[in-house]
Amino acid sequence: MMNLTGGYTLVSGERDGKPLPHTHVADTVVRFTADAVKVTHTSRGDAYAASYVLDESCTPAKVTMTATAAPDSGDVALGLIDKQGDTVRLIYALPGKPCPTEFKTKAGELLFVMTNFNK
Image 1 (cartoon, rainbow, N blue to C red):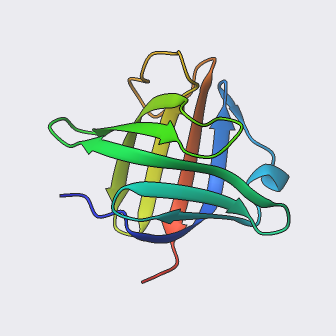
Image 2: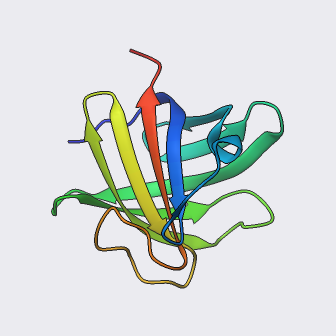
Image 3: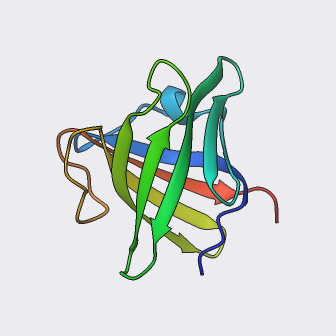
């Protein structure tokens, strides 16, 4: 069973097939509990909060995230997630788009790579 619980720092990101600028991922902390994720930009405040459910019957695992904070409350994002050591890769589609099939973004998809700082 994949244990995501802990704090992570974003290392890189990609959207719509293009790398995100370093300024978009810098100073961003992601915290997972057993069933929730919260993204915070340390200089700008909270960015995203969601509950999540993993489906580990497939590899990579599928994740369904449901936003819990305004203005996105109730929006559902489908994605893939994997964890290798202290590194987590998460790719997901914007609400209403189909679940990605690989860790390479297409239109309407975001990918983040993060490392655990709670070792």
